[in-house]
Image (cartoon, rainbow, N blue to C red; front, side, top):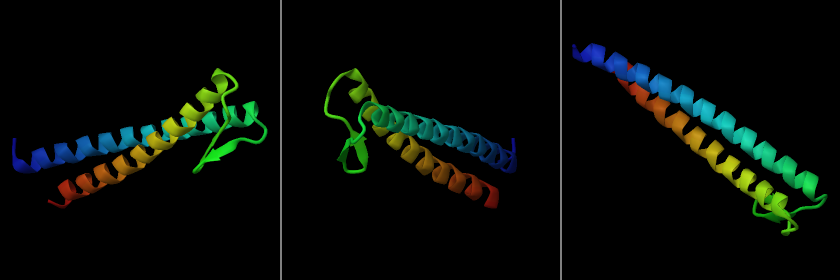
Length: 96
């Protein structure tokens, strides 16, 4: 296997990882929206923790909404970071 073939394989691998990062952002959006909908349905006027709405504990649905919202935010953020990371790596392999 030549060096050029190896570089093309690594570029293809990073393109695949970039697609997985896109899917991760879609998962993050779904979790975030699900958490926000749960919080809005449980409480008409939620309290705010920085940018995350939450409800004072009235039951398990209050915790589920907060957990989904925070998990969605972090999954979405990680997905965006990974998209940028894998795109830069792929472009570096293509340049060489």
